[in-house]
Length: 151
Figure: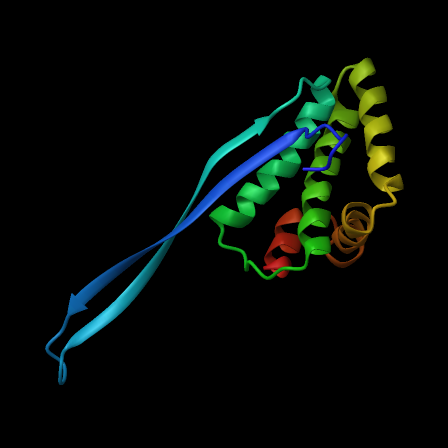
């Protein structure tokens, strides 16, 4: 939360651990512990009424955070990497709308995509530009390949 700034998104996720104990007769004591980690995303929501395309881009960004939780990405990833990838998901949503939206959507999507590219914030803007370059140069436009490498 930043005073004077409207929060536009919310992502709440919950990691929990379940421990299963299995008894085996293979040796002294014969008890082996197995830990199964489960993850859940409880809520993704927009807190403020947003224009439709901005809402879509915000939800794409937040879905990326949920993806990290559900696919158990390491919690120690650099913030620039995490937010850069999330912004890339938002950008890809906007690129899709530029190609397949109505005339008005195409114009709005182009405007929002330019704003993402021009963002001077080191974490969000810088992270995004780094991940966009990785996506296009190192992974040939394959989001799957980039996400596998990020893990």
